[in-house]
Image 1 (cartoon, rainbow, N blue to C red):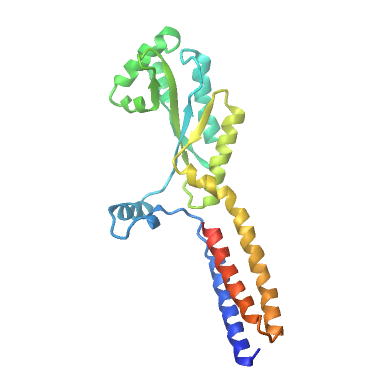
Image 2 (cartoon, rainbow, N blue to C red):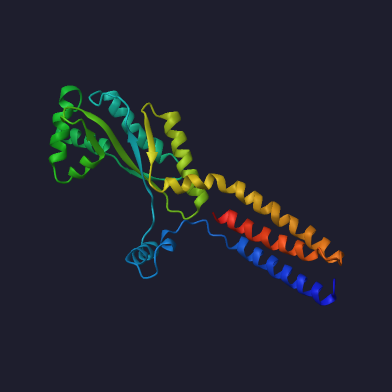
Amino acid sequence: MFPATKSVVIIIFLGLLGAGIYGVTHVDEAFKRRILAKDDSYLKQFLTTQEKQFELSVAVSIVETGVIDYEKYSTHENIRALTNIVTENKYYRDRLLSWMDTFSLYAEQTYESITGPNFLPALREFLRIPAFSHFSQDLKFTEDGSKLEASRIFGFMKTTSGSTTQKNAMLTLYEDITEKSELDAFPINRLFIYFERIQYLPWHGRSCICRITDVPNILQNVLRRRCAWSSPWLVYLACSSVLAVLETSS
């Protein structure tokens, strides 16, 4: 290989190496929806303002859809126990939005019974109060309105932009509810679709690292040998690097 060609190869390699080091040290794990929006769109303006001015906390629905008797006091205790399960998780705030907690407090203050046949009439009276009417969105009654068949409470994830932390918050809460709750409940949020994909990214990362570790060996062989097949090796090196970047970003 001619000295000039060798110098060009070394310069290109050092440039790629420097760019790679810079990229690794400036990795941003945050999933920013505003990047997907058009520059002049109202959505991007809204998301940008929201990120700058307000704390971004993911509201997670803990949904109960099992066949349970809401008239029993034990069921009330199990629903209230979900509060402790969520707040004890280190990734979540120590506050919740729970219809059962508020309903129980209301019953204590008004000296009403909310168990047995008194449960449904008291609940309907509770929901008619304007300050509590929003809880009707968290309750699913049967078609004839004679029975409560599903409900949900809300937990709030601590503010974080790290994708790995968000993934751990999703997985640990699911595990905690499965292991500790007597109810057939599960946590859900539309962003969990994206958090779940992060579980598989480490495998892509390792694939990328393997390709990067091949770079010095390939360059060493190219620089040592003055032969016609040096160019194909350079093409392979470039293609391999591009594919590694694309794979980790997909």
